[in-house]
Image (cartoon, rainbow, N blue to C red):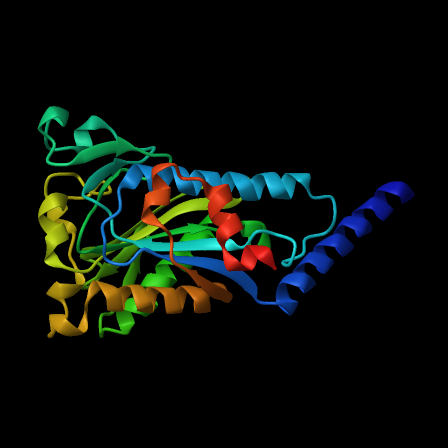
Length: 282
């Protein structure tokens, strides 16, 4: 190795160490959008995620200095319930639907997340995370495992033992015989979007029987209300709270709550939302 090449190597190493030291010295911020129990349409939220991701990608691309948490847009966590919808991931095909499209009981839409077909609707908590993995670890398998950990810890708060199943994303119960949470993500330049969906009430089970959910028989799916002795202690609201708590712990972030205006999602103007966020004015 020439002298100039060796100097370049050590310069890159020092920059890497500086980035890691900055990350460890200050807890990262994460904007938290809690949509409550009111169902939200899928497509506006999907577009909003893509715009939030693009804004962070553009900012990183324009930066010339070393990474600094104070200079970067924070990551984002959204917790919500969707209006009934079937979403087809990049690996999905028409055979995953057990009905003709013109006979669909609800909306069907293609999306850029990985995986096959799944269902979103009332009785379920869906979590979307726009995370810059350059701040954490550039490893999608690690990231999916961390999302699984968030769900597993949250289930534990209700006395439910969540499990992983080798070769399958998501969270399982009952000796890994029933699936209770699905995970499907998308990443561009190490910035993620999409996330997980945790089944809470029995309302979600019948729609899953109409599809080959995540490549599995619909009867494989279960929900939290089938596993707790008292459903009153396991409401969608309480599950959202536990998911937010454990997301912050697993990713070591400080959640900065922000109530989104649902009407703003009709246009999905992420730039306006970010300007309105209190932390954006710091």
